[in-house]
Image 1 (cartoon, one colour):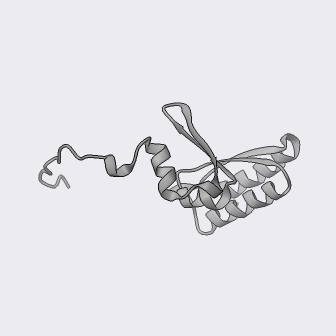
Image 2 (image 1 turned 120 degrees about the vertical axis):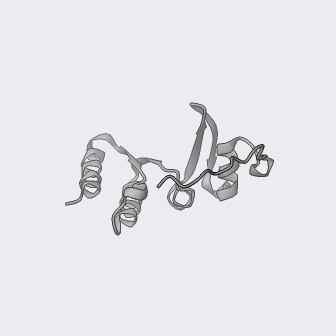
Image 3 (image 1 turned 45 degrees about the vertical axis):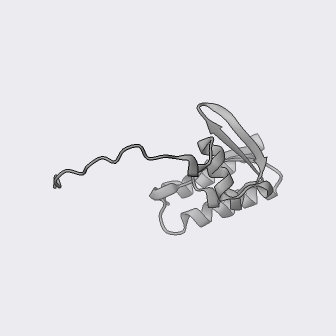
Length: 116
């Protein structure tokens, strides 16, 4: 059994004792259907009435799975809102602390010769 599936099973058994579970997105290390398996497990756990804390940089995934989004910036809570009030661009703005259009490129580094 792959490590992430074992992790899901461990989280599921811990849920029985704690009433809540924390999960992190598998990211680039995910194999095959693991993101879908994790999403399904999160939905089942949440539908049982347990609390789920899901950590991810995948904003579309967050919008799909979460009821509420908490954005942290600089080690502090920058925003907390229901996902029904959010979209991808709004979350990006909350993460950055400003409109992305406000970002100004002040310099462009010159690329050197290829190293490899």
